[in-house]
Picture (tube, rainbow, N blue to C red):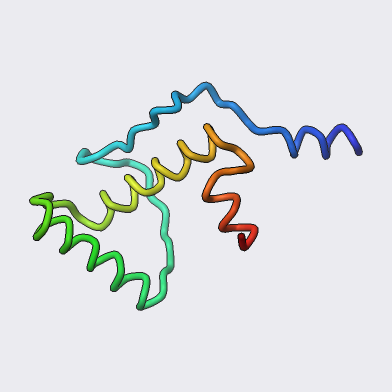
Length: 92
């Protein structure tokens, strides 16, 4: 129905703060599996090594992914249709 379409188009607010923070280094009880290409895995590993070598940050790939997710979701919540996630998923 038209009401369903309007509800789907409206941005969702879940009461999360705009300054979303990733969980960081702690035990996590929830898990997802994400498949990446060999190139994406190499890029992630390269980022880990750059963070360690050039910035003195010893973090694992999971921490990098959690940080990236937090940044993208905060951008989506604050910028909506103009967010980098929406633009990239639309191919712009």
